[in-house]
Amino acid sequence: MSYNPYAYATSEQNGVNDRFSHTPQQQRPMQIPRNTPVNGQGNANMNANVNGSGGGFPFQDPRGSMAFQLGQSAFSNFIGQDNFNQFQETVNKATANAAGSQQISTYFQVSTRYVINKLKLILVPFLNGTKNWQRIMDSGNFLPPRDDVNSPDMYMPIMGLVTYILIWNTQQGLKGSFNPEDLYYKLSSTLAFVCLDLLILKLGLYLLIDSKIPSFSLVELLCYVGYKFVPLILAQLLTNVTMPFNLNILIKFYLFIAFGVFLLRSVKFNLLSRSGAEDDDIHVSISKSTVKKCNYFLFVYGFIWQNVLMWLMG
Amino acid sequence: MSFYNTSNNANNGGGFYQPSAQFAVPQGSMSFQNTVGSSNTGNDNNLGVAPDPLPVGILHALSTKGYPHEPPLLEEIGINFDHIITKTKMVLIPIRFGSGVPQEILNDSDLAGPLIFFLLFGLFLLMAGKVHFGYIYGVALFGTISLHNLSKLMSNNDTSTQTNLQFFNTASILGYCFLPLCFLSLLGIFHGLNNTTGYVVSVLFVIWSTWTSSGFLNSLLQLQNARLLIAYPLLIFYSVFALMVIFV
View 1 (cartoon, rainbow over the protein chains, first blue to last red):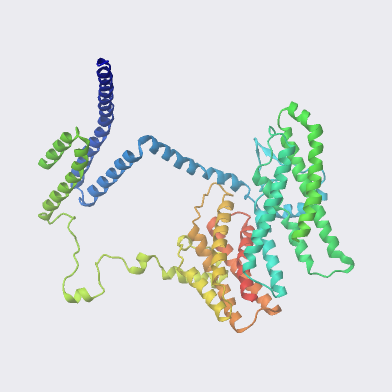
View 2: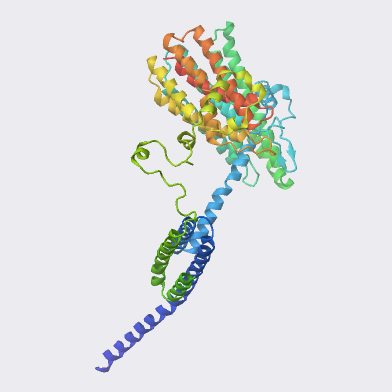
């Protein structure tokens, strides 16, 4: 009985000794690499200072270089080399995002001739026939809007949006109730309508199209959604004009129908032609039911929903 | 040389103990600076000593002179009145664009003129009984940022000439070409513009601003077949300010 407590105490002491002996062994290898770079930097500092003393400004160079290296070593010691590498990698990734703006810039490569032809296409889509709605490819990539009238662009939607807001405020001013605050109000409400429209189109295509098939990007859908401002602006201009036989209502109705035709054909032909570029098996298996469903959805979206929305906004 | 050897030995000695190494480096730097300072004091030819000392005396202390080689204050701030006057003349006489815009004036992105013009616009609206300062700043900032981004995205038409469009260049151009709208608001003080004559005059002033600024931007961006496309958003930008002048 008296020997047992002494045995436990001895074993505990051994454990404590083992832990204590391990800690210095771990610390010593950590310290040696840290000291060596400091010494190297110190030597470099001394050499640089000796060389710099021959120059014209011995006061400024040593302070700047020593302060910079002290800061750098303190920074690396504080954060750690691995974290510093990760930080640099993050900065490089952020810098690489500039390539994304290059993709967005493609949708702004427009010319005057393209804009005129696009306006003609939106207002009179029947003259384009039923074969000329697909985008032109060149070495695996679509041509920019400057060279292909069927390619979507971001210039006309943005200009249409701003023109729509300007004309609405001008009409408010002519009525005698102009307020600069309405500029922001109309901008917010119009952007809300555009986001709702984009959400419906994206959701419909997402539910109908198989995820394997490459579909439109969000920017392209935004382009197609934004084209409705062209008929909306003309309809807005016709609101205050008094014409015989309710001709302004008929013209407005024609504009909305024409935009429905334009939207249906643009999205349908480019959507299915893009899916045709994939394997034949996928295309054959999907074409029967998916094409029919897409046609029905785009018809409902392009004619019924767009007309309702444009009557509300007009 | 002796100091170098001594400090080197100190660093080597401090290598075995990290805390003492941390304390050794500042001491070394301080002693090194002191030694260099003391050694340079005896050398009159060294440039470390101030080459142009300030003139002493009570008369010099009260005068406005500084160092002889110091640049003028306006040049140091960056305000160049010659460029401001030249740009203003270009805005007032748009026909001169046929001969081309000097590159030096295009690259000078000063904001003194634009700030004066915007404050003048707000002041004239205030004299006409309209307080729109907040909306002027908001629309100006929002429009300038939007137009800058749009111009930058559209300026990649020709990849051979990558023009580095700076934000302040765009802001400066838009601000200088705002001058005709200041004249419009000046007219608005004495005459109500909410009538047919006012509409026509406003449209003319907006077209004047748009033509001038599109000329500036076209020279800066070197666009091809896109002058009208650059001019259209500028037309909308200046039209919003014209709406503030016309309607109460």
